[in-house]
Amino acid sequence: APFADLIGLSRQAMVLAFQFGDGFTNMITPTSGVLMAVLGVAKIPYPVWVKWIWDILLLFVIIGFVLLVPTVFLNLNGF
Image (cartoon, rainbow, N blue to C red):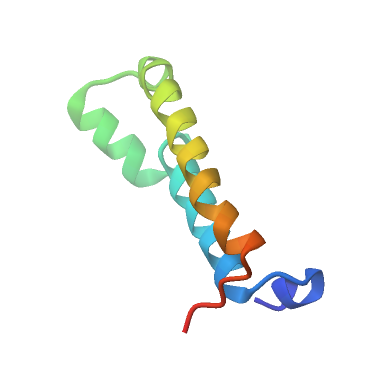
């Protein structure tokens, strides 16, 4: 987390932001082998999946933002 040190955030906040971003993008990235395999087994076309997951993904991003705000502004450093 050297980037967190560089911009003045706690390392925990930076790692949490990375984990949120990674988890959210893995639900929609067409290059994810796991996602494509599951969609293939379930016989769900990718465009149908994107149309269905878009609203839920937006909700998750908003919840992630709300959960991330206290760690940034209250300078919660963890343990």
